[in-house]
Every structure is written in C-alpha cells, then in structure tokens.
Image (cartoon, rainbow, N blue to C red; front, side, top):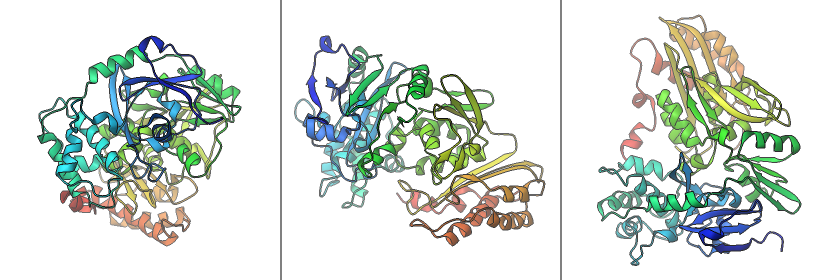
Length: 510
C-alpha cells in the first residue's frame, strides 16, 4: 500500500550497506534500515505506528507542546552532538545517518529508572502524565550535557531548557525541582563513545534519493549537487529544519511535491567568523547561529532565549528563517539593522545583496527559480555602535511576535552618524524605518531628537490589525520601543536592561 513504510528492520553492521532508496539510522542504539519511506512521514508517526515506541506522545502536532520531544544525535567534526527536537514536525528521511533516542531508551539494564525519570517520580512532577515523556527527554538532554562537569545547572537554566515543553497540570515547580534533584542522584552516564562508534561505522556518505507517489525526495551532500537538483527541479519544496514545512503537512495537509532536503549539504553547515563578519551557512541551526551572534552581540541574549523554543531552535535554521520571509519572523529585523548580506547561489552564478532587498512583497523574494540561499553574513560590531533588539509577544518564549524591533546607531561623541532601524509585524515584510532613520542621522542623541524620530516613525508604517495585535497597538508600541532604546543608550545615565525589562523580576523569581 502506498504510504506504508515497509521493511523496517533491526540489522547487523554487515547488513548496513546502503542503497539510495533506503535510509539508515540508529534507533535507541540499534541500527535500523527503512526502505523507501514516505518523505513526509513524521518521526512521531513512525515511532508510534511502526517501531512500537509509543512513549513519545502527540499533543499539538505543530512543535509547540513538547509531548513528542525526542533526542537526535549526529556526528559533528566526528564527535556525537545530541539535541532535543520535536518528532511531530520532523520528517523521517531526515534521520538518515543520525541517531534517535526516545524515552524507552532511558530504562537501565537492571530495570531501574534513569535519574531524570526517578526525580520526576520523587518530586511529583507528573500528574496526568501525557507531557511527562517529553519533559523527561528534555531533562535527560540537559543531564547528559553536564556529564563531565562537577556543577549542576541553575534553576533558570533548567527553565530555559524546558521552554519547548508545556504542562497543564503541575505549574512547573515540581518539574524544576526534579531537574535539580536528578543531579543529586547516583550518576548514570550516557554511553557516548560506543554510540559514536556505532554511528560512525554505519553512516552512509551517499546522497539519498526516494520516490513516493511519483514525487522525489533528494538529500544532496554537496552544494554542487544541491544546485544541480534545484536547476532541474525549480518547483521542488526546499526543506531544512522543517519547523514551518512540517506544519504545511500536519495542519494544512499541503502536498509538497518533489522535496530537496538541504540539511546534509556540507557547505551550508559552515559557520565562520572572520576579521570583519560572521558568515552563517544557510543550514546552520538557529541554536548555533544565535550562539555565535550573541557571542559578539551580547545584546542578543534575550532574543536568543525568546526565539521559539529549544527544540525548534535545534531543528530550525537561520537560512530557513530568512528564506521563509515571514513579516513576523524574529531574525530579520536584527539582521537588517546590523546590515546583513544574503548570499545566493545557483548552478552557474553567485550573487550577494542586502537582506532588506531580498523581500519584495508579502512572502515574495527577489530570487530566481534556480537559486538557493548559501549563507548570511553579519558585520562584526562597529566602534561606538549601540544596538538593541526587542520582541513584544503574549508569552516570553514559544510565541510569535506582535512587533519585533531592532535599532543600531553609531555615535561620534553625542552625534548620531548612522542609523539603521528595522521592524517586523509592521508591514508586509520586515523592513527599515527610513523616515525615522533620517530624523536620527546627523543629530545629537537627546530627547528632542527622540521626539522627532518618534513622530517620523509613525509615518513609516501603516500596520494592520490581526489576532495578535491591533494597528494602534503596533504603532504605539513601536515608538515606545524606540524610547526604551533611548533610555538604554542615552549619553547621560543610561538605564540597564534590568531596569527596563518587564521580565527581569519574573526570571529572578524562578
């Protein structure tokens, strides 16, 4: 029958010779081969319906609730890197060459629970139990992160790591208690080296090609292969982390046609910081991209934590966020404000342009049919530059912005010599506030200039009303955010983030 995964089998190492029409990966430490799977079959469906690992639950089917949280391992620089992801929006073929761990893996050989599980029992961290396996997998991931450290994570770090797991029963306190207690119990180490060796011995370097219902799934390994495929299949759906595309399938029931998966392309996964800029390959995860950018722009720290959730950032890519082009995408405002360039590549050409020039209308880009985003480059901080980015949403994390703003100005003494201001949620695309920039440039950074810039800002946009915010709210808050930026960067007695952030006291109380 079409759509049914056939020939799933636990196999020996001798049987792992791959052909292009199958995928192989480790499932809870055991090698598995799946012959010609449906390209849009979710990992969650595979686990529950084909592999018998039913501990992983389906809650929202859109990557929000975390009931389906699993851990994915892959070799990075020949070392095993493990991270939490949402199984509900992860397509099964993207597991090729990786390791998948579910809650069933945690039970020890003698039948004892893992400390992450036992601590949840001891601290009464589970009530209805539906979300519990997802929480346990997130806790297990954090537990393994500290396997060679003498310290344990603080309560806020645990809370941040659980941002992708929602619970409707406990109020989270006992779960955070369990997160602390698991580090006080006898240590159970993850057999990282043996998993690494098994994975290393069984990873295929072949590019995968699958066929299903007359449509193809291709996973190229090189940029040249990807460009050749794009030229021959310009209408194909480009897939990276799948954090948006997964919803097209689960919620919109949209057929994807041919698929080109870019997650295995070596060149797209490069992240390099040079003397002038940070160059982030289109396939680099949001987790790694935001970590590197925040290292140079510490003002990005709150945005990094507030962007979606940990599992979404682990799966999603900065290139995918840029290519999606949503007017409420949280990456575009700060990228535009910092003067980011987007680098495009096709089979026969390369070109670069300022990111704001990529967007020509709602969800429309100035890209040729055969082009791919290769990388995004971000200038390193300039001397005397002041930069901030702010997000307004109903929740701290795992929420879409009503307004997202980013401000970057360069000062020479008290005078603003350059200004770049960008907003998301205010127009059909993320774009610059050009009238406001003109009102700032060449003027002293004081209350008079602020007032003039705020008036100019009101002429830059005609925002719409929708379910997230009204037009008047967006207009009012945009000028309020500019005032906050002034308060934090004014020449005399600037305020600290703790004095302006509404979340400062909330986080201290966790």
